[in-house]
Length: 126
Image (cartoon, rainbow, N blue to C red; front, side, top):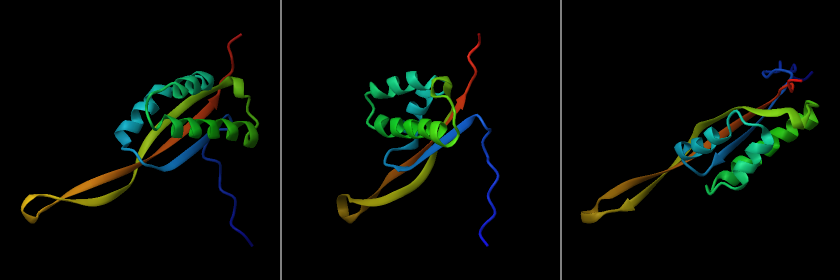
């Protein structure tokens, strides 16, 4: 008596990985998602490795997780993988206060984001 298995949301030639609670604004994280969208995974990993952005390490770990999911869970060929989707979403926002002049306070918001990467196996044209 357990739960019924859920239908698979992705196609058979796709795998995905999600990283939540990344301590950066979604706008900054989206710059890296745009950088790798549509590229082959080896090229995307190289771009993230040499990126000067601080969160490039987190996005690279997510991409490596998606590649590992494709290889181990869905038995896809790593050499034919392409970053099909890379999108960013908002997460929680920490609210802090900063003291200001004349006894007032200013609100500081520290946003978190999440990134979802979907890799797809494509057939090489012969």
